[in-house]
Image (cartoon, rainbow, N blue to C red; front, side):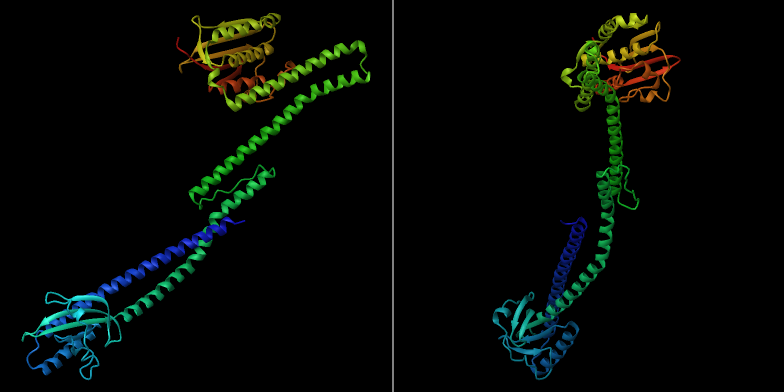
Length: 475
């Protein structure tokens, strides 16, 4: 398996090497082109300069040739270009390399090269094989007419091998620079790559520890790292915190479910075992069968409630289930269903409902369950001869506020943020709500949030009120 560090390090080194190589080749190419351009200009300039001297040749040929050779020799030393003068037939009659015993004298230049020249300007050839030099040379030729009307050809040339020698030296220098830069860059690339991989390795280690159940691990956020790595570290820490909270809730959920299921399951198992082993006499079995049946129904209600919660949390409230309905009618119908319980406790009901109704758009069945759970909770904790209040009013946000209140024990301030939690029961309510699961208010909150609305609770001076918002539909 390839490691990210090795792959990133190798990739970076390859990119740097290819970049330096491309830069070196471009530099080499540009250097050669510049050198050739400069030499070609120099060769042409040498030919032009020698042409001016050749025009001054007089009738005394021998003397003129010696003078011309001296001038050509000076020019060759200054420009590093060899210059020869040919007569009309192309034979070399003067040379810049030596004043006596010049081996180039008498050499016949190719007519095709000489004929390319004219009085107007020189002809240039970037590679010409000149036999008297025994090598290929860069050459420029210009035709000149002397004062006496004779035609002369001035040829200035430079060794191509000298150019190649310069290019080889430049290539070795470029190669040395390339290797030197690469050697210096390797430690820097290794350090930077190692530094970039450090937080990723920390996250990998932290993720591996989290996979083994250690939810408290976090990675360090180093301000010296790049902004992207810091954002990644922060995102990882946020994810770890969310997973830790989720795991804590899961453990609490399992613990709560286990706690809530233990009593009815123990009761059911005990009564069934008692009837099977004869501990419970036949004449009492019907009584205990009814108790067992009630416990089974309670377990069924728990499972159904948990399924409803899971469905709403996963899918929300589908749009096709929402329709227009009257909140006043829904509240009134739920109140009528509690008529017997209200009369048994001699409660006073205070209803403040709009005469023109309150049209809203939501899932009627879900909102009915919300109102039912809140009224059931209010009736349950309202003492005898207490007051049960229901109110629907329009608020400034253009929505309806549905409020259900009851008199009775005040919920402690520290308990208010927890009343909507799953399986939560206050100490006071445990003695009253023995048959409850602590899911009623959690279901209410889940349904309201599924409609993207808000729900609140207040409890002070012996009055507890639950209120939630609903969208208004104009008639």
